[in-house]
Length: 348
Length: 141
Image (cartoon, rainbow over all chains, first blue to last red; front, side, top):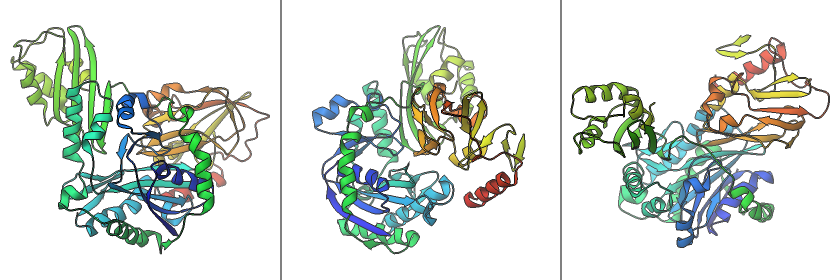
């Protein structure tokens, strides 16, 4: 198999080339980084729901919809991308999703290890550090007769910009997402305190992928790939492709931080008033929750105690925890029953 | 209802090699994913319903689904025109996994001509049994 190490490329090429390769029947491993930062949303996301497009415009950040799945990401030159285009019948592509991800993300984890950050594959599609923090973004698309796996080695990450360009219902929610991201997403530089040369990062990645894919021969990108990318450019940057609606959710807002960590805000109309709950969950357990609304409660500052009581509770145990808390008489909220709290917390 | 392993395959349906089921009634084919196909897909998190009126070609992808950050394409087993799409799935994609042969149907296609299901397989036939056995081996199921 060939490896196309393209170095830094214009931001749009960092997306178009891997979309073009399967369309002209070219397989291989592409390694590159975008010369300019941009925002990229998943194939099935609704841009207006996910992204503050005005904030992107003010910062001069293009927004691109990829064919690959997953969520909105901020991408820049501090991330080295790998884009693996495999024929569906290639030995490395066989098996179910977990087998596929495991086979091809274990080399990524091993590359992190080579760079001084012990990491492992965590099903279904995460690469995480020894203490479980995500350190690579990944996704897959089936394009033509090919399977395309994309991901990155993250040297450094601009948490602030990503959180600033995500659409959020309010600043409290933005703070919650920011905090969760810093706790659950890390980088090579945060883990080691140093910077990395291009050859260091790409060398580790190519060596480790070669263990699975066989010898990887450096090669120039075939000209037909660039021609196809040029043909695709107006299609994949056009309004028909970009502006289509995407995944619907009953939540007011939902941001997935990693495979097992989610920050969600829901609004539920109870007889006693609107209940708003911003909840961070990890492995289906509440990490922290913020409750607000236009209902009356006694005592007036009593919600803080309920928020504390729900931290650490598994979603499946919420009903019991809520019943126990209200039975204790520390808080009364007329017109907001346990089913209402459960609905606001996303466990109804 | 045929059972192979833990997977159900209603007898009255025909199946493609890529685990799409087809039910033809008059000039309309209803399609969905088989329970085995969903075993391979995993939990579906989004279904992009195809546009009604769109022409589809047998063997060509015409809609997409997502699970585990993996965007897969569904190929039409027949040629024709999309008559209806199950738009409920855009809100409740879990229905595909929960009721693959019922409320989890994907689309209804008005056939372009007389139904030609000769390329499809029926449960209980040697070809179908052999295909599922090969797929189980291929995917470790």
